[in-house]
Length: 482
Image (tube, rainbow, N blue to C red):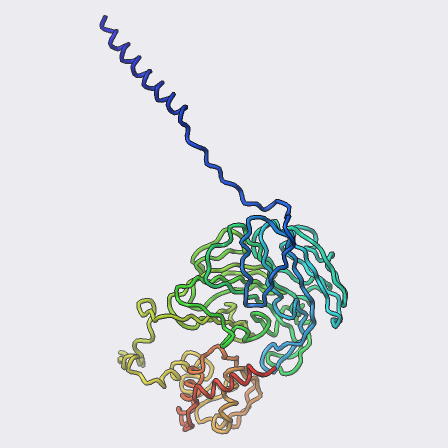
């Protein structure tokens, strides 16, 4: 009889389990369903005319739940535009701009392209969209003679940032002459919040004349084949995003750059000096990398980069293949406004003398005269060529010490040399130099004025000061020229 309690206990446990099981079946949890975004339905609303923008502006994102029929109207124009001060070129363009207009659609959209070739054009043109999943990217369907219009439709099936360009023979020549741009296919959920979005595109120019040779330049096919560009620029021209044309943000803002590389030859080493990319979408895909210093963008490719700025100031955007930046024009700027952040980065605290022995501490930077911005700028920028004591390098870089050229040349001309560069021959103290001085327009008016004033008052020179207002005047006169 002792086994009876055990049997009763077992029966009780079974009853409890059964009760629990019965209760769970009676009150099941509701299933959670997540509806996939609509990227495949047939658009039923009236066609939408796409908003197109010129660089560096970007159209607003379309907040739509379903695909639409979007009409994109592009007009090919062959126009003469400046490359650099005093230098012009006949560009072949989409919409009169280099790069071409920024196009923005949503994944799943039906995109109807109207390509018009202006009657004044001398050549036929077309467009190859890397966003098209089909042979030629639409190039055959859009081959358009001057004075004609072609139309075709494609479905934007894949999200991302894509290059479009002309694919009429000879293709490299059409691309090198400015026929490239970007189309963004937003995923339905977008890329998240950004305070500013900007359009930046790198490209190369192969001119018959040398860098900064004045006048109307023509295309040099041999340089193109040899991959020896005369200019490497952002948004179609040297200085297109510098000074009063720089892009702007405030500290704490999230800045998103849609960056393309039209090529037609070089890979871009895209970098912001003093900035770190919070996110980079390599090849403009959907899977970002984080905390990136420099990102490669191939010819015919694109990337989306995001960054925030904690310290105010002017940040230079460059191709970090640095001769392109300092000797071929690949420099742009982001001007960031906001309160100082000495906890993250200070100005120079001390200036120490060093003669190989124990250094002696100089006065703190806060006590240094304002004129020392010129000494600092000269040491940072100019001394590498002209040497710390202004002695120059024999046969290569002219001296600034006791320079008859400094004494006899108008201040406006000297300012122009710094802003726009200088190619020889130039005669200083009886010796002719044929080197090349790169343009320094990325420097502020205060920095240029300070550096020139420092040189004009040092090493035996006793010349008057250059003011920031004088630099601004020369810069403004150049910007106002057609």
